[in-house]
Image 1 (tube, one colour):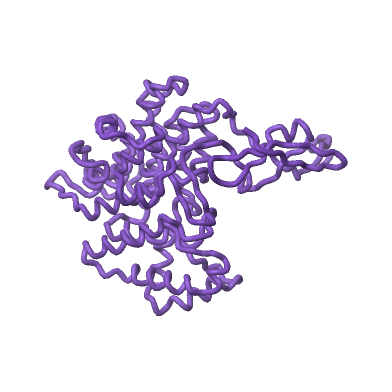
Image 2 (cartoon, helix red, strand yellow):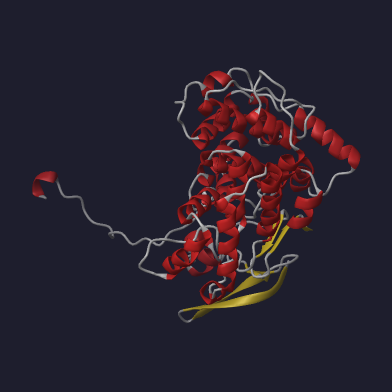
Length: 428
């Protein structure tokens, strides 16, 4: 309900618009009737000052470095929860009881296998295809195999589709990896955890048993939880926009994967790792910090700063501790991690970075961890997509159920030619 009003003066006329207040966060000016009442609309490239929906799923306070899922702090969830439990929370709104979690976990485990014909779909790709290209195609193709869960007007079908997407994404991602390295696909093992099953499907082979390392399993669980949802980012907004047209859920998630593939979004952890490799060793850091400050130098410090956070990314703190645990377990002294730790310390003490509020974000350490575990860099974004599917599914379900949701139709500021008459080609 509106708590106040905002007045807009346009020419000699004044119009009043309601100001809405959420449970937490800044107030929002309701401009839905702006065009109808004034004949004008707002101009907001990137929608950085525009709320496209109301949501009860994720809250971010970028100034304070806060990230909440359904009210629960992300660090508490990453340290204490399991990924299926977080998935249940995001999709259903509350943490599950033990019986509810057991039933949800059982349901997800019974949807992990892919239709056998999809194996032939993989074989249509080149062996050197990027895993994200494969995932875009395979996820979009799911709608050709599961016709019983594409009716978005049926809540039961929506939930079945949600369970299928959450359950099958690890299988799809693992098969994308296996295909590119020429190894046989591994069927799911429903006796393992969500994360353990994914690790086995990725790194196991039929010729010998695969033992899940609990430290690596815990690290992957944290990575999945930390990437599960992040409010109305580019890929989530893409899923909502595609869903607003009534597209089936598999097509919507495929659209989200395509958006996530961009280097400015899901590819940032790969870029951060490549940057650390370029720096090479800690003694070269001052040189690269100086380059980052030089406006005429194209070099940028990847993994620092965030579109939303103007403080320390709360997910980065968990990632930093996890990186140390993984490298200790694997017995690796990684110069990339040494460089990352030294770079973080120097940057946090540098007035330039302090003034611009450029703090390490989640991508800064996640690439180091995934590299140490054994994932090639082109799988990093695919793992991001695997985890973010939970958030996409939750946001898609919320959007479908919102009675105020309309098909997305942004306006534009037209700067082209005004109306003019056609001239026949012989007269031009």
